[in-house]
Image 1 (spheres, one colour):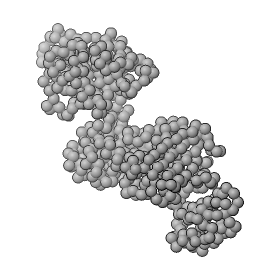
Image 2 (cartoon, rainbow, N blue to C red; image 1 turned 180 degrees about the vertical axis):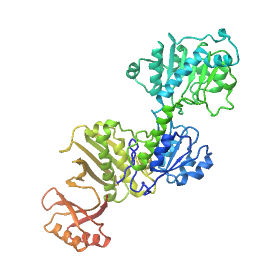
Image 3 (cartoon, helix red, strand yellow; image 1 turned 30 degrees about the vertical axis):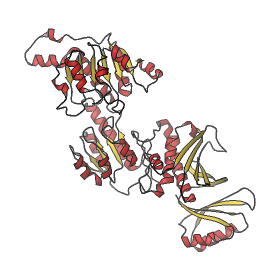
Image 4 (cartoon, rainbow, N blue to C red; image 1 turned 120 degrees about the horizontal axis):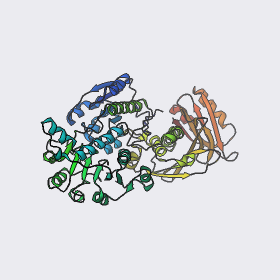
Length: 545
């Protein structure tokens, strides 16, 4: 089984492409170092400035798409990308990518979330200082031959209060650097704990309280449905007339019309804006306001950041196309780096267990339950559950199924999913995955673990067994009678089928029994019918893993 992992994302045998040289479309500017890396392992086409229709026309032959902030990856683009496996954003955020549609289609979405962090932090501080000391206006005046020093009396940062909206990576680093200027820092972030705020050295505050108290307000929140228009006319009215607003995050968080009105009316001392609702901002009302510092979305525009972002997204894109771990996926369950070494083999195992159950149960499945025990129970079960769902669903749908969209596909098929954890080890195994599926009145169970780095099936229904889940298997249930194994072996030998392994499980002599054989070749239907006709046989099921 091949796996494309995106934190981790899994791409199945049917989802993978037997393509010797993957194709990558770069639809926005990318630094040369990233392009060079892509060219080493893929066929690369660079086409900047494509409209939606042009992108739709181009995308069908590509396995990967890399964009920055200009190209928009809409639902129509994703629908046209029938071969598309990954979309990479060379920067933070994915607001120009239809993430829900990509997830539905099983397309991995990655970004370079950290490579430009320091550049964005430093640009924020540059704008704060420029705004406080009127640097752009003073520079322009000197250029024009003026020396009106009294026109450009600024304010010091020392002793002022900085309000940060969004205490993520960038917001936290801005807070630390502001403290070096002897500023007091308030922060508003509904998803950050008091402990985290104390670590950064800031005080958490409600948004309205922050706006009333802060001398400088810096926005570092993502653009989402809950933050769009967050700073509207009512919120901006809470700011002190001496306050200054800085936005290096995303256009659309601050209402540009309301901000322009507040600045023109003198209800706000100034603003610094690096991002706009529409870029370039040819019609923004802010462009007519004098007390604003503008930059053209330069937060990540340093040589170091551009090189880092390009290499980061190129490495992730190639890793995904090779079937390897991808650290920056934003639409897949997250696995902490320390947990990956433990979980990765169990993801492979979980998919094999799901595939095994799908083949032995045959018909409709109403519900799947995933139970983890031992050390596995200490970690997030979402990746394991997604891998199991992938194995369960993949053979019965023409949709691409992977860890990105497995739950979505299951939900659309009416498949209920339950999860359970037990911190204590079960049986003699340090870690165990149990999958139980319900189909009407029928319930089937399979359990597996990793032994000596190799996946094993160690339980089927209520039978203990030790099976290598690879290649072609033959699973039989029968009454335990003398000579059954010999007759099965004779029939398989006559059909030129070689048995490489055999395991038998039973509860009592001459009672119900299960037998699993690893065979070197698939068993043809005629031979399966002969085996099923043996008098003690109850079922004979071929399985391919």
